[in-house]
Length: 169
Image 1 (spheres, helix red, strand yellow):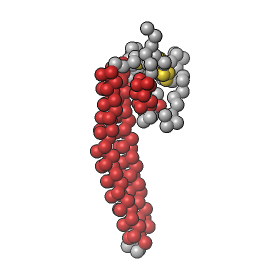
Image 2: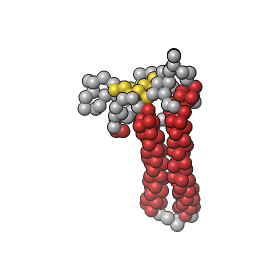
Image 3: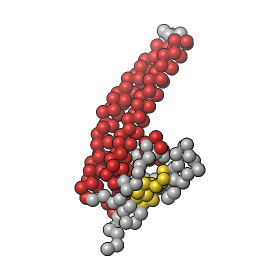
Image 4: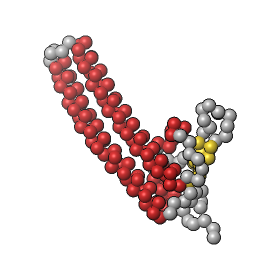
C-alpha cells in the first residue's frame, strides 16, 4: 500500500488475522529479546470502532491544520512585506535579519505543533487498538518504535483485518 512495507522483524501480518508487533527491548536492558504484542482479529463492531477512530484522528487534526495554514499564509505575507521594505531601504540589514529569523522561528514552531498533534492523534488511535485487541502486555508509549507513527500503517492494518480470510475450522 503506497510503497509502505513494514519489515517482517517488526510487524507480522499473519494469515489468520493476528498481527504480531515486535517491540525492541527496553533501553535499560538491550540484551533482552524483543517483546512481542499480539493483536487478535477484531470482530465486526470492533473493526468499525477502529475505523471510526481513525476518521476521528483526521477530524481532530483538521482544525490544527487549518490554523497552521492560516498562520503560514500570514507569515508569507509578513515575509513579503519585509522584503519590500528592505528592498526600499526602509529597514537596515540587522533589523531585516532579525525580523526574518523571527518569521522562520514562528514557521518552524507551527510545523512542530502540527507534527506533535499528528503524533498524539496517531498514538491515541494505537492506544485504542491495543486496548481493544492486545493479547499481551503493551509497553509504555515511550518504548514504541518510531515507525508506529507512519501515517500509512493504520490503513495497512485495517485492510489486513478486512481482507484476511478466517482461520481453519
